[in-house]
Amino acid sequence: MTSGDAGSTDGTTEDTRRLILNPTSGDGDHVERVSRLAATHGFRIVETERAGHAIDLAARTAADGVDLLAVCGGDGTVHEAVQGLVAADALEDVALCIIPAGTANIAASALGIEHLRDGFAAADRGETKRIDLGMADGEPFVLSAIAGLPAAASTAASGGLKERVGTLAFVIEGLRTAREFDGLEVAVDAVAGDGEYAWQGEALCLGIGTLRRFTGENEPSNARNGRLEVTIVDRVPPTDVITEAVERRFLSRETPHVTTIEASQLEVVALKDEPVRFSLDGERREYETVEIGVRPRALRVCVGEEYGSRT
Ligand SMILES: Nc1ncnc2c1ncn2[C@@H]1O[C@H](COP(=O)(O)OP(=O)(O)OP(=O)(O)O)[C@@H](O)[C@H]1O
Image (cartoon, rainbow, N blue to C red; front, side):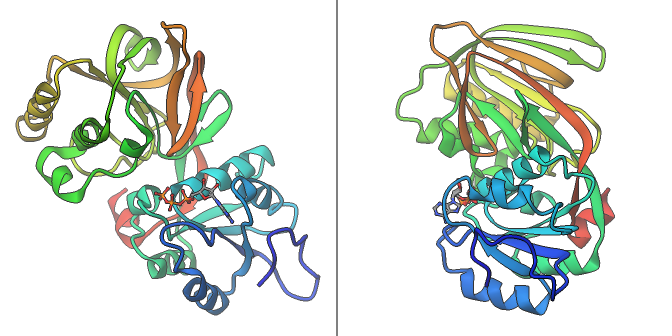
């Protein structure tokens, strides 16, 4: 195994497949198994040694001649690896394959990769798709940018709840876990398909999704239309949100307190003195003003068979 700070290849082995391994993600019991699978599937491993390390490790892959980068960890590790590829301008040279070993693994799951083995199988099948990349003030995100709910809520809502009420389940889960909640006073200006869209007021939450969707069916987004799914939930009592989530799911009805638009870019401005706290793929960020856009189909990813046949 190569240490995290190892440089490029030693010249004696072909190193076009590399795997960044976060040994601390999930419950941390995946290292041995992943090491064995990586060897079988021809990946050279580099382990992360600290938070943020996957950014540097990914940034140097293209220069080292890597064309397939596997990332083993959860959504946070994937987020960092993509940051590294963007920083090195390497999105065209290096395809990404997620090997799920985190707590929630929302990105892997959205791409049809549920288990470690599925990740390696996807790498071997070699089918890649181009997916949209969200950008928040220049920082890429794969899944979503969420404001207004505690960070814990931006991980997956429980499967059962999601089955019952659809993708808005994450809001309900957030309300359940929030001990105190201040609301979110923001102005949102978006460029939508049919013109400009402006919203201002107090929201319960704001969800901006690429691979992740917040309303509609339980299916994940295919993240290939060059647009962000923007969902604004007004500040209303939790019971209203639950009712509306159910109405949306089962009656496909537009509901008064949940606004969904598709936008190619938007600006979010905090209307209070304090910055707005966002979760970018689960990583915490704060902004007084943030420009959020999308780079259409900028990221090449390996996909599971089911995703491949669906899109
Ligand atoms: N060697 C390391 N030591 C400590 N922290 C690390 C190390 N390598 C990576 N990290 C940090 O671990 C954090 C959590 O990783 P990640 O989000 O991938 O897993 P998770 O939280 O278990 O899963 P998920 O995000 O899917 O719920 C990341 O923010 C990353 O910066």
